[in-house]
Every structure is written in structure tokens, then in C-alpha cells.
Image (spheres, rainbow, N blue to C red):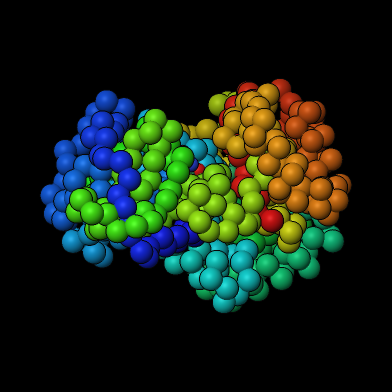
Length: 411
Ligand SMILES: Cc1cc2nc3c(=O)[nH]c(=O)nc-3n(C[C@H](O)[C@H](O)[C@H](O)COP(=O)(O)OP(=O)(O)OC[C@H]3O[C@@H](n4cnc5c(N)ncnc54)[C@H](O)[C@@H]3O)c2cc1C
């Protein structure tokens, strides 16, 4: 979850427009239930900040929190287009605290994932946020998967993932009595959490430290003033003007963009490179009927395809006790569209014209066809699930369209 840091500084100039003073202020976590404004930090006027962070998902909120805790003298604002925080990817994911096994040793991702898992557990303990360290099995069900499984185990050891073991069928049964497999990696450090709750807690820390969250603020323009303003003091101090779709403005010195599925567009607005472009994929999850939850104890994952380590249907226990199965990955017709027929002409045109989709399709044709087939035919997904838990049948699945999310596919 690496935020893009965008700096827009430089020559300030003629201040454009005044301050709207009519911004919608959002105070999560519950709509309409404001948190008291925290103390500390240097207060800016309602619409000018030292630093503005665009995007109120977990990346934006974690960045805002970290920044204000390290630099309490800064005035910092988070701008979020929705009325609530963390309602997109952060509120629509599998909720797994990954251990860091998949990434290339010594890569930044490997270090961040291993360190991040430890920090999340520590943070949840500190704040009393519920999580379950229910572990994960990565299970080989075919002989040909075993060398890849062993290589993954070595990689996990090199990455310093705690407690890893390579286990045989009898130990698989001890961990997951209904799961079959030839060999598995037992990863007890993996857990589950509600990431939206974590994100909202970050927002609360941020606000208590003096930060401001402005919801219902969809950023549409970012520009630097071009000449030295003669009359506006704020125009000198805060040379960047950020405008929303209603024409309201905030000003600042620095912008950090963390706009999730719109990160390419916001990057471009901020004068930076829009690459890599976002190609949206929707992932459909299935849900196991409550009376069948006993079939799954912890996370059960297939041996990953090295090209898409996080894809592949998996069994995921949720904090509410339900068991999700999925997701698949089907090209979506809208970036933040969660229903199969959600459509945005601009998003579709962007995918066709700008994203290099054709290349992506050619490179991964059979994978894509397989995913679409699974999306259309429930029995195909169930057949795949039965490789791990043979007892699962189509009638054990409660909801075909339980949850929808988008995959962010970076070129
Ligand atoms: C199907 C799926 C399953 C996943 N499972 C896991 C998992 O199990 N474990 C894990 O660690 N990660 C998982 N992830 C990844 C994880 O969810 C994301 O990495 C993370 O949520 C990204 O957070 P974000 O803040 O970048 O994006 P988001 O949560 O999408 O937040 C971006 C925010 O920016 C706002 N925004 C966009 N444009 C504008 C604008 N113009 N003006 C103002 N605001 C704007 C949006 O409204 C949104 O609130 C999963 C992802 C998917 C898609």
C-alpha cells in the first residue's frame, strides 16, 4: 500500500479566487456522529493547509496520521470525495493481514509487508481493535505445484516471515480437518481484520492530533498560482489551489495524492505522470452458508501463479464469522462500480484508449477467459473450491453476488 508522494511547490503567484468557507466537513466514523476536533498542531484557516492529502482510504489516512504525528506543527487536511471515509478498496477487500511471504526477498514490498503486519497487530492491540490471528495454509493439490510451493516457502524464510512450516497431509488435516492437499505451507502469522475499522481509527488519531478531514470534496483541479499575488497573504503561503466539482477551493503548500482507483487521474491533475494507468477489475465473492462454516477454520489459499500472487480463489474467514470464497477477477466497466452492470463511458474509453488493455489481454488471454467462465458459472468456481474442500457443493453457497470489489491492475 505505497502512497504516491506528489510535490507541487515552486513559484507562487497570483492567488486565484477567495475561500469558499462552505466546505462540507466529514467527521467519521459514523455519518452524522462528529468527533470532537482534536487539539495540537498549527491550525490553518478552514481552507488552507501546509499539506493536503487527496483520498480518504487507508493509504491516505495512514499517511496523514504518520505525517501529523511526526510533524505536529503542520496543518494537514485530507480531502475525500465520498460522504464517508474508507468506502472503496479499503472497505471492500478480503481483510487479510498478509505475512509477506510472496514478495521477492529484499524488495521494498517484502520489507514493508513483513514490517506492516507486525505494526498492524501492534496498532490493533494498542487501540483495542479486534483481529484474529487465524493463520493461513497455502495448499498444493497437484504434484506439479510442489516445487513452486517449496520455492515459496524458501522465499518466506528469506523474508523473515515468522513461524513458517512446510507440512504434510496429516498436519494439513490437523489444521484444517476438511481440507485435502499433498503439501502445504503453514503460516500462523497471517490474520484477519476489518481494514475499514483500522482506517477510521487512523482518521480519529489524525483528527485528535489536529488534522482536518473534508468529505464530499471531489478534487477536480489542482494548480499552482502563476504570479506573485499582490493582495492575498494566503496566496503566498499556500500557492497550490485545489478545486472540487462544486467550485470550492482549498489551498496548500504540498499535495500528497492517495486516490486509490483514481490515482492515475489525480496524479495527472497534479502535474505528474499518470502511468501506471488503472485497469479496473471487479472481484465477486461467494459466501458459505452459516451451517457450513465449520468446513473452514483459517485462510486457505492455492499455490499462487507467480504473475498474480494475490489472485486465485481463496477461503477467507471474516471478522463477523462469515466465510468468503473468492474473489475472481473480471474486467469492470466502472472503476468504483460494484454491480455487474455499473458503467462509466469515461472509464471504458480510458481502458480502451489509454491503458494498454490489448497488451494485457494478449498476455493473459487464457487466464481472463477462465475468470469470466468462473464468473458466469457458479459450478465452475465450486469445482475449483472442491480441489481443496471436496465436501463443498453448490447448495452450500448462500449468495452468488455477495460482495463486489475492484482490483487495481497496474501495468
Ligand atoms: C478484491 C480485493 C481484495 C483485497 N484484499 C486485501 C487483503 O486481504 N489484505 C490487504 O492488505 N489488502 C487487500 N487488498 C488491497 C487493499 O484493499 C488496497 O491496497 C487498499 O485498500 C488501498 O487503499 P487506498 O487508500 O489506496 O485506496 P481506497 O481505499 O480505494 O481509497 C482511495 C480513496 O480516494 C478517494 N478519491 C478518489 N478520487 C478522489 C478525488 N478526485 N477527490 C477526493 N477523493 C478521491 C476515494 O473515494 C477513496 O476513498 C485488496 C484489494 C482488492 C481490490
